[in-house]
Length: 235
Image (cartoon, rainbow, N blue to C red):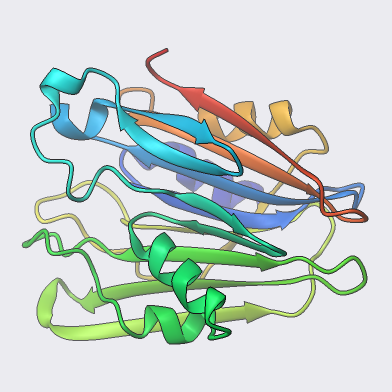
């Protein structure tokens, strides 16, 4: 796990990332999400909380040139379903769940982002809260070798949480032109008992030049009550 965290720290551009897991003391289920940026348009963003959700927002509105792939809800809460993604598929998942359909059914209607030649993967996660037996899933929708004619849709379902352990995916393996899509299974990382410590831990693992914003959600494993912590590069 620590070797995985070292690789993340040494990766100058993992892109956007998701971690889902449970605190070491077993008291909270955890979601972490971060965004990074190389262009001025991508870096000109902050996270803002809207009720039970979080939205990306332009830090300086006049400098936002193309909001299509950078303004969205990365986090939404729908009853006992806690959704986290890197794009507007958050809304697709929420809409499908509201119709008693599944996370997987929703994402089978979507594909990677239309930002050729990068074809950025869409990464998504969900926690199904249950005080007795919570579970979670992760997904990545991507190409094969940046070939936009080939779609690869991967789903990972976890019936159990392990105390102190998170599963991590992100959009890129590293920097490049085009950017190489994440080409691995979700890997294991560690979590902290405190929401602030968890936020600071993952913020510190991200490249200081390219990190933009990060959020952490702690869900009380007994009650389902939750707290959200946000770190923005620009405040």
